Image (tube, rainbow, N blue to C red; front, top):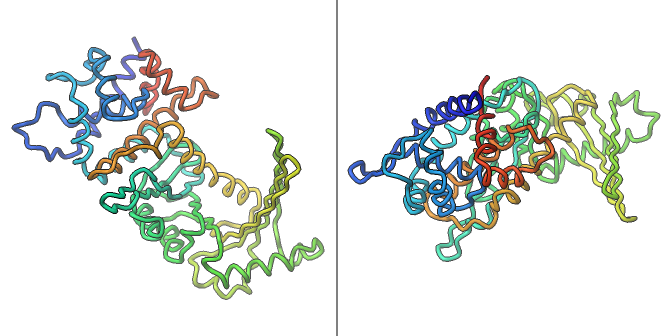
Length: 385
């Protein structure tokens, strides 16, 4: 009884937020309310529905259950109606609802790492019209493993314009923002500081001179004897598992007075280096990465931040594996972008359900598709208590 009540409360909160999406359909012809359609799509996606038709089937099979939360005066909308609605919804407003809901349920603590990274939705490329594949830049909060928001671009190269747009809609005050080399830009660093965040930005060949200077500095300092003089703080980590041995060495220093470029990067406080060694089946690999940071030269903190950035890769992988994102053939109007938001709603909802800690998102979806009591349990997690 209590759980169902909680689930009803939480669903009401979600429905309240979804009610803000403007309905641009011709009202005289409308049989199903917009919020009902979006609510069905979110719940059905959590429960394993991967396309419009499956959403309709799931809702038809559970119409009485759905009626506990939404009136469904005219029954269940057809898959064509669901698709039409998702083509028309303004994705920016849908994203705003998603972000507001996430802030409400995710218990965001004012510390931690926000990783920003882009992913191309390969299947949205349309050879018939020459329409480019959709590229989505997402922000991911390492402490909860949840997505915070996204912005779309038409090409990977446009990440440079999408990242500032994303930073403007996020609240990053008090967080460390991590971005791959593509987003290592002076104005992006400045925007992070202006929005009261900190940054750890990967540095690659897109800033060749700066990259070379920092590389040479660390090379000189490599000899242990110099470490005192160079003021380098170090940290090591080792991992063993699945036949692979990994070691990571982290170096960070605030000794950057010699660096001419430091004035051009807002609040540049330290520079870092990570050396990654891995050995598997006798095959050895070694990779070195450099970073520009606005955080103090604290090696364990630097290590923790860099490690957390890699978590966003697992989020992209999970969206592929769990929601078959790369094989979706949805290309028309706003549907691809809205579908991406829909997946992230479902992803965050499934992340909140912690009773079976080791269960994969895919397994949670499978269980939710066959068990309404488990689905209610999942949806009852979207609480603000």
